Length: 363
Image 1 (cartoon, rainbow, N blue to C red):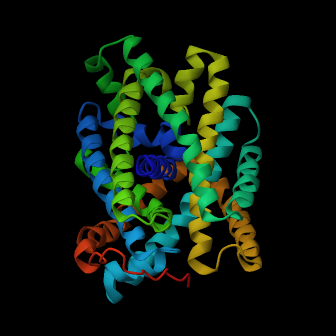
Image 2 (cartoon, rainbow, N blue to C red):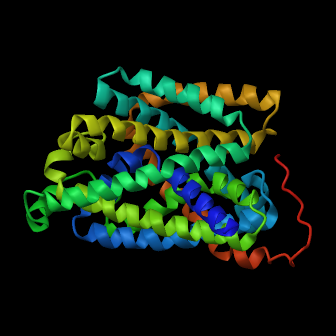
């Protein structure tokens, strides 16, 4: 029973890391899947398979080497030549994704309550900075606790959208294909989407796996998390496809669907979306800081504050613009990491049961 609970905790936290502003709002799904119409479904299936395998690999490797930071693991699985490239890509991605989350927080409160965008962004910066100062177990617990609410919300939105659609998917497809796509074709979208998500989630997922003693339990948590994430992608895609004629013009299309159902429900959805944005923002800032300094020290506190303020300033570029530009770039760069993870199980052999593993030092 304990193992089952740990698997659920890991899978829930993995989903929480990946599901940030772009996914929870529907903006990522719109640009990567719905904009390709029916072929967006095939792209989502490609992403699901990659999420399942890569989530399992990351959590397994994190547990195998007891990762406290991504740096040691990345150099082990990538080698001395590819390692610095992958490490650099992850560092760039961690900070950039934190910027996108902060911008997303501003957009969601602006769309729902008409607050100036900087209000939501500043609120997220304050909350995320305080949370990052806690230890990793508490951070994982915070991240995982919000995820079930999003899963339930997406299921309900998906079911509602499909059963209340005003036109057939065939009629809606031309409208869907008019939307801006993040990349040029559907199969590349499936690969790129998984690539950039895994790249920005890799660091925290490795650290999360490092907190689990049983390698098998950690791997199953990553596998289950990846599969559930795939189901959420498909449900979100069908929801947006069914309502694309009504929601294509807004930053937060999923929130718009709920607002059309009930203004009261939209308030609850706003809280859930903000929570998921907070999850990813915390994960990115924590992993970025842990890459350079020891956590839970005065140095890490100072570094966290500086990082958060820098990300806040950069977030004024705007949410939709950042999603359309930053994510595809990271997706292409992240292919270096995908390659490294595919060969990782062969580079880092499994430790014999009972053998003491040295915890990776943060450097």
